[in-house]
Image (cartoon, rainbow, N blue to C red; front, side, top):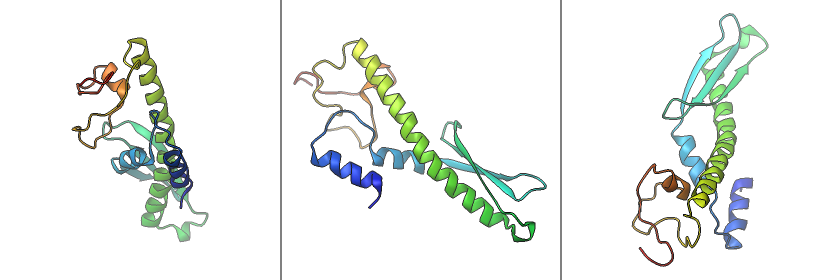
Length: 149
C-alpha cells in the first residue's frame, strides 16, 4: 500500500469531509498528461516534459547514462517519462492544493461557503468539481445550499 493510499484510508476512517484533493483526482489528472521527449544532441541525456491537455508544462525530467555505448533512445525515453510522471504527480498535488485553497478563499469572499452542506449534487457526473470553480463562474452546477436545491 502506498503512502497516499494509507493516508486516504486514515482520512476516510476519521470521517474528514472538508474539501480536499484526493488521490483519484490527481491520478485522473496524471492520466490526461501528454509527454514530449527529446535527446539533447551530442549527449546521452533524454528530456521528458509532462504537459496538461491545455499545453501547460507541469514538469520536465531527465534521464541519461554515463557511457555513450550504453545509450539506448527508447530506454532513455521510457526512463525520462517515468521520472516526469512521478514528478508531475507530486507537482499536481501542489498545484491542485493551491487551486482548491484559492477557490475556497474566493468562494468565502462572495458568501458561497456559509451553509454549504454538499459540494457536489447527487445527479452530477463523476467529473471533479470544486466549489470555488462555481464561485469563479467557470461552470454552472446545482448544489445543495442550506438544505435547498
